[in-house]
Every structure is written in structure tokens, then in C-alpha cells.
Amino acid sequence: MKNQKEKVIEILSDIKLPNRNEDLISSKSVNNIKYDKDLTTITLSLNSSEIKYKEIIKRNCLFHFENKDPKSRYEIEFILDKNKDENADISDKNIEKTIIPNIKNIIAITSGKGGVGKSTISSNIAVGLSKMGAKVGLIDADIFGPSIPTMFNCENEQPTFKKEDGKNLIIPIEQYGIKLVSMGLLVPKDKAIIWRGPMASSAMKQLIIDVDWGELDYLIVDLPPGTSDIHITLSQNFPVTGSVIVTTPQKVSTIDAEKAVAMFNQEKTKVSILGIIQNMSHFISDDGHKHFIFGEDGGRDLSRRLDLELLGDIPIDKNISKSSDSGYPIVLKEKNSSSVFTDICHNIARKIAVNNFK
Image (cartoon, rainbow, N blue to C red; front, side, top):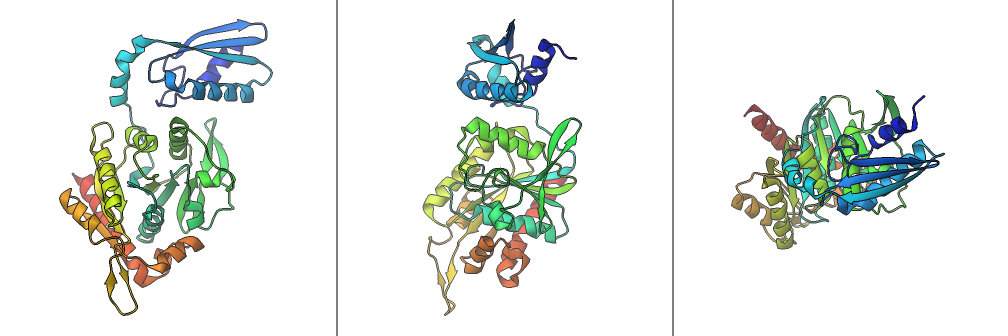
């Protein structure tokens, strides 16, 4: 039978620091453990960047202790250790990436701003690659606004779990040949997720690591719009093969798309950019005329200026939005409307093959 000290250390080793891929024990964050009858007081030593998350760490610790040792009482205290600050920047630069052995390629799909059709494009790319014979998984990493369950008609399904090496693994939902995980499948659809950045980043990591993916040729990560903690966490902690930036031709969209490109070009968040997809490029009326509702060729001009490939040019098509709302990605049915997605998938596969050969 474990004594109290062993029990406490075991629980603390399961609790990760929000801004690092280390637990409280391996990071040497535990300064002292004091036992006094029915109360155990744990003092954590944090640096200047970690101390900002002390309330999140405290809640996380108490949650674990209440679940794993409900009969005991615990108190969490903190001290600031500025000596740790000297190594903080170095550790950020040298975060060891987590390799998922059975996943060959991770593709991040993002946009500078919301409402540009990123999740619709992610869904159709996943299915399109699968139709080409690849084994594909899809993560809905838009923690606060998950829409993938709707687009795959599995809103009311819940993933199951299995135990492996003492660890609970999520068994992903399978729909249209795609393995899916999303916060939208793990929380009630009428509940809002109200988390600070570090908690969302931690959840995103779990959606990658704590899932029984099996063997995959491609893992598509549908990121939230913008440049957030989740983007940083993905790029710093996992070997992302390449990223795809989605924009519309509109100036306000391309300005933000350029910021997304800049993020993936920075040293700490460096990810190869496969190219740009211009969505909602034009509308063709019944008389055959093109109408440029959001401006003309903004995404194409951006790709030229940044010397990036334009992976695809997607017109405004009511069939695409109808298919997404009905939970049946258009690449599965409409030949005319889906051909642009088929071309995009071939372009992405080609770019990845070339990059992997280098």
C-alpha cells in the first residue's frame, strides 16, 4: 500500500504545467510537501512566466486530488523563483517535439480571421485525401467554436475510451472513412467552453496524444482563426509537416492571412507553408457572368507577393454550404462542385511528397 508521500507524488506527476510539456515533478516545480494530520500543503516553485497561471494550476491540482484522493484535504501554495527565469527562454526554444509514431504527416489548416470557410475546407480536404486512398484523421482544434461534428453529421455521437498502459485513450468517431475528434463531441453542444489560453492549448495536445489514431497518412488539424496559444502549442510541440492558409479575396481577410503566414515563418513557430487557398473567390450567375463579391484575386495576389503556391481557388457555391450544413462534405457527391477540392488535395499531396523528399 502506498504511503501518503508516494500517493501525492504520483498525482503531481500527472499534472502538466499549462505553458510547458512537463509535469510538476519532472519540471522540479515542487518546492515542499508538508503533512499535518488531515491537511497536506504543497508549495510549488514557479518562474515569472509560470506564476501567471497559478490559479489554473491550483484548480487543476485540486481537481486531481479530489478525484484521486477524495478523503484527504489539500492546500496549494506558490513561491516565485526568479532563478528559474534564466533558463525559461532557452527551454521555450528547445521544446522537444512529441513524435506520434503511426502518423506520417500532420497538416495544420488555419486562417487569419474567422468566417472564411476554413472548417468546410478542412472537412473536404480530409475526405478528398481519403478518396485518394490515404488513411486520414481530422482534429477539430477550434476548441471554442467546434463545427466539424456538424459537418460530418455526428453531433449526437460520443467517442468511447480504452485503457492502454494505464492511460485512458479516446477512440475517435469514424465517419466517411475519417477518424474524428472534437471538443464538440466531448461536451454537450448547448454548453459554451470558457477557458483561458493555456487550458485550451492543453486540451488540444490531449486531442493529439491521448487518442488511439492507429496508422494515418495524414492528420488534418483544423485550427481556430488568428494566431493564438493553440497555434504556438501545435507548432512547438509536434512535428507539423506543413500548413495551409485560407483566405477570401477581401482585403481585411488577406491582411490577417499574411499575419498567419508571418507566425509560421518565425523561428519559435516555424512550419513549412504548403500554400494559400482562396475561398469565395467569385460567384457565377445564371447568365454565366462572374461576380467578384469580396474583391478580385486578393488571395492570388497575396500568394504571388509572398512567393507561395495558390493551392486552389474556390468559388461561392450554394451546394458547398448546403452540404456542410447537412453533414455530408461536398467532395463525396457533387462532381462539378467537388472537383476544385480534388485538385487542392492533389496539390497538397504533391507539395508534401516534394518536401519530404528534400
